[in-house]
Amino acid sequence: MPTRVCLAGATGWAGSALARGIAETGDLSLVTAVSRTHAGKILGDVLGEPRLSCPIYATAQEALDRQACDVFFDYTKPEAAKANCMAALQHEASVVIGTSGLTDEDLAELGQAAEQKQRGLLAVGNFAITVVLLQKFAEVAARHIAQWEIIDYAHDDKKDAPSGTARELSARLSKIHPSELTVPLDQTQGVVETRGARINGSQIHSVRLPGYNISVEILFGLPDQILSLRHDSGSSAQPYVGGGLLAIRKVGSFVGLRRGLDSVLDLA
Ligand SMILES: NC(=O)c1ccc[n+]([C@@H]2O[C@H](COP(=O)([O-])OP(=O)(O)OC[C@H]3O[C@@H](n4cnc5c(N)ncnc54)[C@H](OP(=O)(O)O)[C@@H]3O)[C@@H](O)[C@H]2O)c1
Image (cartoon, rainbow, N blue to C red; front, top):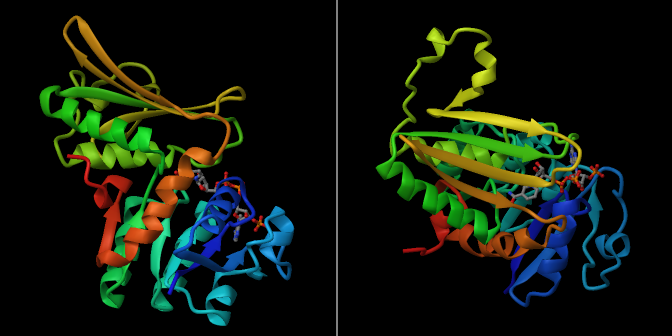
């Protein structure tokens, strides 16, 4: 039996690429999709992919009520994602969150619900394998270097800041140690905001300008030397498809919250 998937945001930039990716597989079946503007239509008609015959509903709740699924995947917007994922857990589905902008508190709350329902919840700030590798390399660097800062670059109309990738990176590094500050923030002379936001023990700076796609950079500093790790995304959503499919396949294999694609990958 194929794994039955409900995809919220199936008509969006990331969701439509994932939907087409699911259509290529033999072991996954998209049974429902969510989009307010295309509700009532068949997903394949909207995406021009005849293999996607599932109906589109206006809300996640409606899709979940109409058709059971094994895995709910959210690629919508931060203001909708938490309620969508909570509804999916209440419907006994495992959940993959691709949407960025959820806070650590949101994820902890959803994680508790997942534990109660004995379901998996996988939150992935970035499904691209090259970003997963950047995260791993940064963890290695943080074991040897006390100080770093993160810069997240995105297009001017990206509403959430910092990016999911930057949030996830800071959450991971906080488990190693917080980045040290030579001058504590409260002793900064001038405008303290120019030092960025302190999240999970990292200073994060979000740049939002036309001309950028999505990039993340982490700078590790030691006296007289800087190590820079940077990832630049192209303009298509294709790099996220393979990781999204992997997440769907793996999320049913554990209970509770896991963060990052490497939590279901063996990268050793
Ligand atoms: N984790 C990763 O690797 C990764 C990769 C790419 C993107 N993302 C994140 O994924 C999210 C979606 O990005 P995108 O670029 O695909 O956005 P997008 O092109 O604007 O697509 C958003 C999709 O969600 C639906 N949607 C929007 N608001 C909704 C709501 N309130 N309720 C229900 N459906 C809603 C939209 O359809 P309707 O407007 O018709 O409802 C559309 O299908 C963002 O948070 C982005 O940062 C993450």
